[in-house]
Image 1 (cartoon, helix red, strand yellow):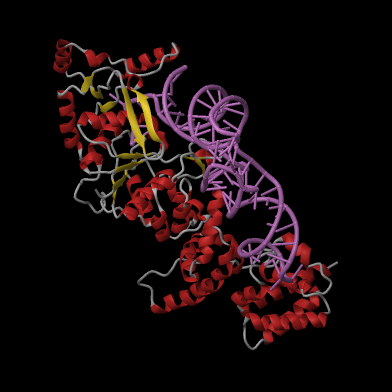
Image 2 (cartoon, chains in turn cyan, green; image 1 turned 60 degrees about the vertical axis):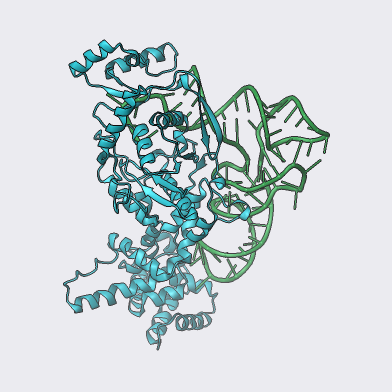
Length: 509
RNA sequence: GGGGAUAUCGUCUAGAGGUUAGGACGAGGGAUUUUCAGUCCUUAAGCCGGGGUUCGAUUCCCCGUAUCCCUACCA
């Protein structure tokens, strides 16, 4: 039988990175085995604080971003649709009737209040909490009475009262649970919507799912799901419970630890392949290959359930950054330029592109003034970026109107403008650069080396003041590439401004 | 309180009944000297504890301990 795996997110907002990792595992397994990857929306919780309709689009956007498109899902449909649980209510209804009829499920009329009190009392007495099954053993008369009254009810699973449920987890082997310790799980809520356990079992069967891959946090409630499958008369799929992703304090990764929503990572400028590679490695490894960087085809080729880890992994933001930097450096400059432009626009460093109905002239001017400039600059910083949004700080000085001393780092100025030869240096540079026949990094360097000799100082004592004078800072790409990218006009303006203002300040009494 | 899972450098992990316990991130040092980054080289850093089984256990078993997860009409 061919592998069919599903990713079953709830629309509670932008998906958690942990959920996406599970989706990646699903997808990888499906691709590896020539199977089918299905996504199904589990929108059965209608409470306003947990039902976030926009979340649906965040989920879709995340899958698209990662490039792990489902073969069957709510966007494109498929032979087992609909892929949205709220649209499958009649199916659950029909199935629950069956269970009630054959006695493996029952209606429970207990109120929320009674349940709360019961739980409270259990806790106070140090007893295990759980439904006391009062409605399970209602007399037929009582039951008929409640029905006649129209008392609201939920439907619960009649869990076997003794014996054990053995779950075979593909990662952890057989796990035995005592049935008497399992609760009579609610299957249908009083609003008529199914709970996870019921909808999951019905749908996984209907969609012919072969492997349920889901977080370790589901492991302890797994026997209840198994019993739902059993009650329904269905063979349960195989179970795989990958370990949780945790924070530095080893607790389930949450907002407290930093960003967890996938949308945040997309916005910051993490590349899809870096995110995918990183997430996969958080709980899976290629064995003794001793490698960290894998292309998607390499991952598909190597992926296996057996390679999955069984203990929780701390989400290491540092390692993600390193990996993202690796992928940025390995990218075509054109790609990085394209990805960086939005950050520059957002930061106000370059204006928005002219609209489609702008004149050709406007478009040309925009291209020559901004695009061509950005295309020159961004590749100079490519090897310095770990996350794309860093481009703003990295290249800011290229775009900002540096107006000495405004925009200059005082520490940089203090460090390098004190050199005795600053004045002749700037003057010689202005003259030499002005006269340069061609504005290339090589020509600039040759001219600067000549000046260094005339001045009789060390090259470094020329380089550094020059960098500060033209960029306002001490760090950046090589000086000559920087000057080249800056262009003749900007370079000379900055040199002249520095010369004029700095020495005016110095020489005044 | 009950149940389940897990335990190798700070972190992600590899590994095998006998290994100098390997790699990566991060950290330290060095090289490249035109800064930063990058790149290259390099150093430190680990088998939770106790019993067994065994000639031998970090590896297999048991117990303990610790941690996490679940214990909802949330998923």
